[in-house]
Image 1 (tube, rainbow, N blue to C red):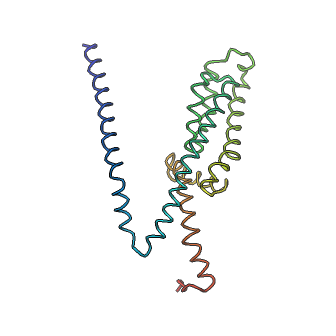
Image 2: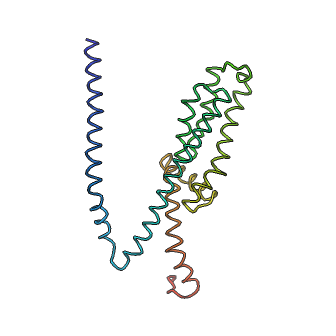
Image 3: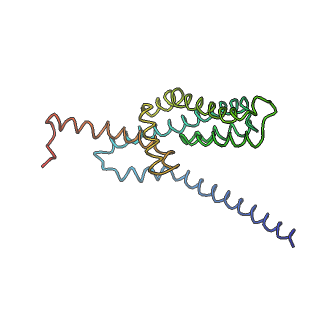
Length: 225
């Protein structure tokens, strides 16, 4: 009976996985083939006299979002290498497995901070064969050093050069947007905070700020009572 039950559960798992794969491929096919009509539909909702300006702004936002995604993937790849080498050096168990996993978490800004306590726990549970890596002070200090190296590399080198270049945002703005997104919406807020902030910056620079300057200079009608 147990063998039959295990076989049934296995078949159910395989069937569920096959169904999810089929549905994913099914909807992806129709989404891909109909994407042009979706764009045409949304474009038809834009007033004709504003269409050119709106499309221009949307295209700029699309470039920013695409650059953000490519930038985070590039940064995550660099940090995967850093964590792998760093964990091997300080004596964390299974660095070839744990390093890429922690580095991949860098796709979401600042989520990789869980690496520090996790590395300490693993080093305490499975001490290294090297004696100097088993000292209690090294178990506490080693992961901290790797984490701060990752933070310095990410915050002051990789993010300004890669992320800031594509989003046209400085490091203080990126940090503030990430913190605000995390406070307001948790992990999902961290994930979308930077592209949302970059898109808002485009709207402010291209729409709000020129009109505000024109109002301040007296070239626009005063909207105050």
